[in-house]
Image (cartoon, rainbow, N blue to C red; front, top):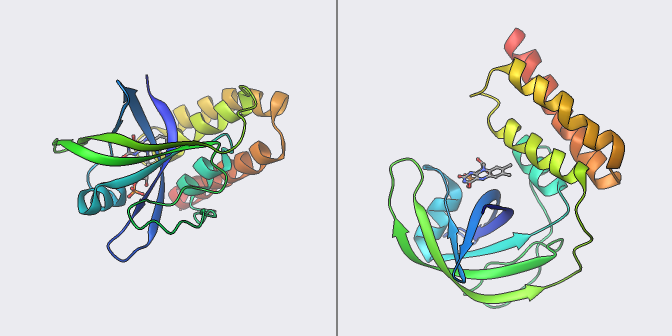
Length: 189
Ligand SMILES: Cc1cc2nc3c(=O)[nH]c(=O)nc-3n(C[C@H](O)[C@H](O)[C@H](O)COP(=O)(O)O)c2cc1C
């Protein structure tokens, strides 16, 4: 099973990096699989630290992949051996990388969980949130997939938005639509 989460990591210069990732949780260990090259991979390789943010505010996924909102508020923590979590995270796990399974495309980083914290309640499933996550994956592959396929899938995903979105999902969806439009305009020129 893959959990779509936001991974926070920290660079050598103490800059916190925020990235959507699909992780696995098996036998109380977290596996993160960042593509090569990526800032997430570089940061974890440097200090072995990451924080897994389980989050129902899907604006974070859409904001980062569209690049329309990349800075999300972080919790202030003093422990220098921990990466801060997003203020919006429902639950977060602080993790420590223990094993790197190298791969030229996408290594697996297997981590111990050092702390699990529940910050706020999970309010149930929402179709619009799923639509935004699926659309965010499409956006991260804009340059790889045929635009016709992307437009066709967006058309279907829009149903979940129209029927079930709240203000956060609508805001995220607007970024998705804007990004696709900008991409089409750039590629028509
Ligand atoms: C739902 C979702 C899941 C993703 N899962 C992964 C993943 O497991 N590994 C990865 O490298 N990128 C994944 N991506 C794409 C990254 O978030 C994106 O490429 C990001 O820029 C990572 O690179 P960075 O660490 O340099 O920021 C995912 C994107 C989305 C929207």
